[in-house]
Image 1 (tube, one colour):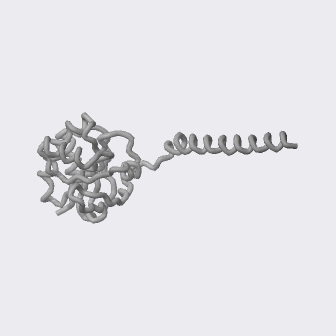
Image 2 (tube, helix red, strand yellow):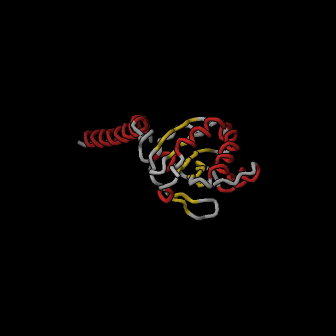
Image 3 (spheres, one colour):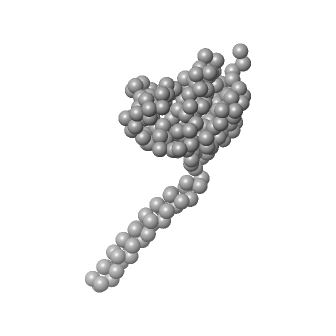
Length: 178
């Protein structure tokens, strides 16, 4: 009787462990494939993220303006190369009802401040320290940029380094009508 009880307990424990392993594998493998990806014509998911100065930025507060969202990391070579292009776009379009928001993914404030100082950047940056917004937008690579119409819908999603000529063309596609 005692032997049967031990065998029964081991079977239950093994079944529980096996269920946990299957659940974890499903969540990490199959669940990632079904991850929602923000696409052209979708409404951009709203978010609130902290700026470097501690204030919060809420995307929906920019409805009525065209918006460029750029997800980046200081360790990412293409991100580094496109930052001067994004800075120039910010300088050129900031007085034309356009907002440029750079979203740093998973880095410390000190790293981002040092990167901005070293590269003479003054464009807006927010911190996605836990990659929550990165995940909400279904991003897999950096840099990734979203060009948003003034109504908050996505006009274009671009993965990779943006050239000056593409930046100009794509920013003009989302400019609000005057």
